[in-house]
Length: 323
Image (cartoon, rainbow, N blue to C red; front, top):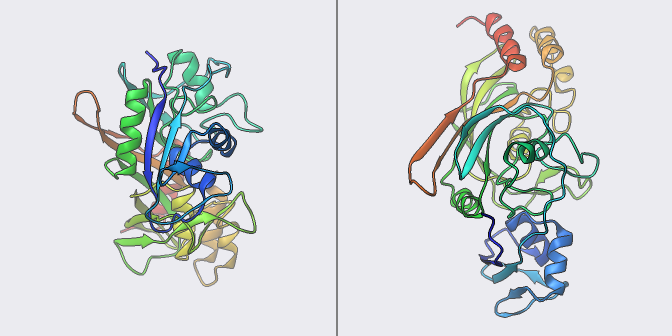
């Protein structure tokens, strides 16, 4: 049953989160900037105990209180789109998302999304994510495949969101990255923010939010590597930005590493060009997901092997580089 009461959120501004109040609340609670500004106008946000204003900025240590009313009834059309459901009970489900599927409706993608499919399958989802993102606790990029947990109830949604914030959810990815890391395992800790020159991109920036990624080489190929990548935080495009930042962008990444293989020289250049040609999309797959079930307390673990398109690429790369 969907909760029809207001939900209250008490937030502490962490180091690296200074800046506009509406942006801070939007990113922390995964609400649209428009919705946050409406909450400000309605007097539902306070800053250090006083009513917040649209022009306010936040700094480390400040306390922000947000009262979010129940979301409007979801009016997204339910669509009969096949779902690969790995697990389901009355509280939540885990889906193995296909590449090319957008997670939730957005400008240019009002239909054909994972949310449209979920509404057909479930009929009633957690409303915490708002009108356009019901049930969505975390996201995967359109061209990233793999495991995603979806909340059916508001209680499950709040519990999962809290566990994500406190880094209790294990999220492991498989990524192919160009070149060879100098060390493995490798911890990448670099703050991430919107790129000031292109708002559709993310970038490592001093004013960004704390971001932590751990990387380990699983297979060494001729001019690339297959990596195990563990997310400790969940910033937009985090893996792609961090790997590009250390000079090893994800293979076939059209935003952070386009044409990377064309800059390679030496005897492995033709191999790199062929790998790029064979890779049909971003080589990034959410292969493992583990979290505590909020109702039973049981630790749930799920694994999804590489889908056929990426498995074929890995097989080719592996065959050309015998151990």
